[in-house]
Each structure stands twice: as C-alpha cells, then as structure tokens.
Length: 275
Image 1 (cartoon, one colour):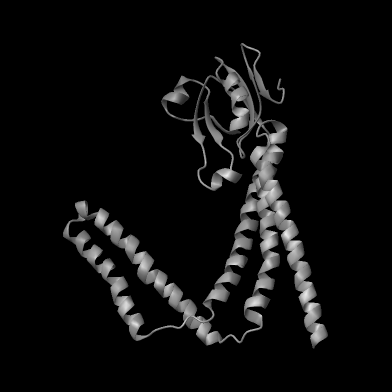
Image 2 (cartoon, one colour):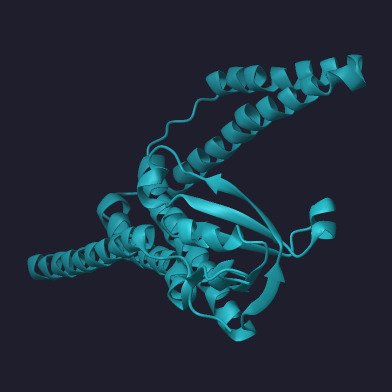
C-alpha cells in the first residue's frame, strides 16, 4: 500500500511540474503579446499569441484539476447528500439574495413610468432576502464540503473557459487566413484609445481602435467601412499614413489587423509594403 501511495504521489508531482511548466510558457507568450507588433503579416500571427496563451492556461488548469480533487476530496469521506444540500443552499442563496437585489433596483428605476406598481415590485423583491434569511435560520445548512468542491469546480471551469476562449481567438486568425485580406482606399478615419487600467494594464497593451470611412457619405451615416486595432507602439507610423488626404489600406477584417497602408499622395507607409 505504501508503494502504491508513493507511486501515486510521484505521478501527481510529475503532473504538477508539467502543469507549472505549461503555465509559465503561457505567461511568457502572454507577455510577448504585450510588446509585439500589431501590424503586418507578423501582426496577424501575433494576434494568435493571446489565444495560444489562453489555450495553454486551460491545459495547465486541466492538469491541476484532478490533482486538486485528489488532494482535497478523494482522500476524505464525502457525504453526497450533504454535498447536494450545500450546493442547493448556494444556488438558493444566489437566487434569493443576488437576483432579487437586481430585480428590485430595476423595478425602482422604472417606478417613474410604472408608478405604484413599480414601488410594489421593489418592496416585493426587497422582501425576498429577509424571508429567505429567516427560513435559513430555522433550517440551517452546515457547509462541510463546499470549499473543496468549489476549488475543484473553479479549476475545472477556469480550464474550460480558457480553452474555449483561446480556441475562439485562434479561430479568428484562421478565418482571416482562409478568407484573405481586403484592400480599399479611405479618405477619413477616427479613433478611440483603449487603455486598460489597474492590473489589466500589465498584460494588456494600450490600443487604438480605428474606424475607416471611404467617403463623406459613410461619415455622415456613421457607417464605418473598416475597423482596425493598432497597438500604441505602432500607432505613430499608422497615423502618419491615415493623416494623408487618401490612404490605401490592406487589412484582415476578423482580427482587424492592418497588413499594410500607404499614402496616395505622400510616401508614408506602415506595415508591409502593398501595391
């Protein structure tokens, strides 16, 4: 039995080491995506870096999930009925505390148009948490297994979300490669700056979200003929081209990647050389 336990522990340790290695690789790719160029064909391939990093994050969490389960739950006696009651209590708590709050706020916000009915709904929804709280005091639930189960569930859900999100991000690059680039002449443009704040600014670059218009009619109807996403480091050379009276632009629509641009009158260009 001791030999079996030791072998199992070594297998878990190996899985954890592999998972950590994959996690560090994913983090490295994500940091790379923070500083790499966003224009040219290189920019298109770099768009997939964030998707690849999320796929690797998902793989790492998928490796950690069974290890967490074995460490936190497998070796302990789990009363399935008790665990079911705890999960039911969590769901009911969400439905009776969180949902009524938002419904009450919505009813209160609509009271100007709905009048007394909106006020009545606000009171009714606001009373639900107090009624449920009184019921729970009379029928308490002891949360013995939920912490471990929640940790395992978190790892599993994180893995699934990362894999799905990363696969979707990579699929956009594949769609652009299969569909090919577009090329048009544009006379007007406008942009907004997407600048992350807080912790997100460490791993997410500041980008310029650009709307391109072929002519004044498109501008009048606020109908963008193309949209681009350009990292702040690449923006000065892109702006120099777009500031010209007319600019020839080649881009991939799904990922909004600028392949190349050149001024019709001047000699400014950005990204790859285009004809």
